[in-house]
Image 1 (spheres, rainbow, N blue to C red):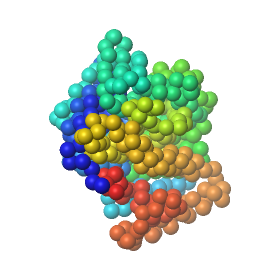
Image 2 (cartoon, rainbow, N blue to C red):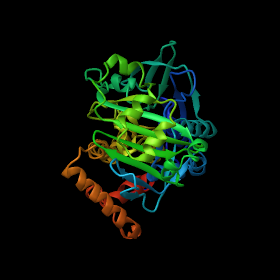
Image 3 (cartoon, rainbow, N blue to C red):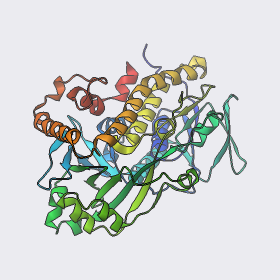
Image 4 (cartoon, helix red, strand yellow):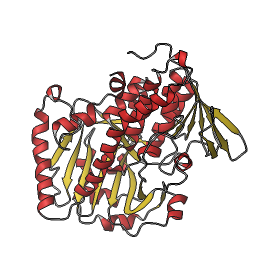
Length: 434
């Protein structure tokens, strides 16, 4: 059965005006739903560093008319060049993005793009709206904000991140707080006009490239930005004891010390050490992992968690935002199946279908991101040597692959061509249409 051309139009509240919430607002408003976004901050928060919108998420953006807007704020990437911390001569292998391109950009730019698109599509974005209460058993479902206002809707979409208040409200008897880890990420940027005169950094400046350097207990990723910088994310897996829960709830990021950063990576290749010499400031970000939850859907079938509120993951598959984008574009597609004559009563069944479709892919990336963290930070020894040999083999094989002949397989080995194609060439709109 095809989706209804004249599908039922829902009244939808989205909690959270981050990139995922605003992308949801865009896709849902384009389909004629009445959408209001509630954001607790007084304006868009220009926080967050560089990120990659992966090929499958870029395809999802193209489906809702934002492909050109994404390209305008991004640098396209054709593959990830892997280096060993022991070798300054060049990459040991390149992992291809297949037939599609990744888009290297920054979180604030994606957020602004999605905000502008949501307004054009007809969504309302309300700031200073701190949600403090939820009644998911009422129909319509109800939210209350700290200023005493009440909101009602057919559907509440919780896009309020890893520290989601809505997740806490639909699981009041379960500990769903994020769990701090020993890991710490440092983020830094240096203008390209400064680096271009330093020949030691030249390998990192090749157009449309991203570079990952792997070492014992730590690794790094660097890429150019659309606004003329080279950005580096430097990861220390065993930085120190996890921060207290109260501290991690207060702020995810804090100022870092460039000298500490330089000292931690002093054994890494010449290009990285040279880049770090130019770093004058940085931030550090203590990593937490999400608590496991049995369902993304509230018990009434009228509340759904999306993005990090549903499937937060450590950043080592570079998929956290991309999975959120795929999910909300997919949610809009699923709601096209709502039959007008049922007046929205089929919503719980549609949300069940949505989670059944999306959860296996998100869960796979949660696992992959954890696996990558361990694989990228192996100590010296046979396992590290085997990993590097595999990367060299991939670098030799992938340029000769006919990706059109590769069959997508979610269950294939993680570095296989079949799995790589499943990661990169997935089409959420086609999936929903099956």
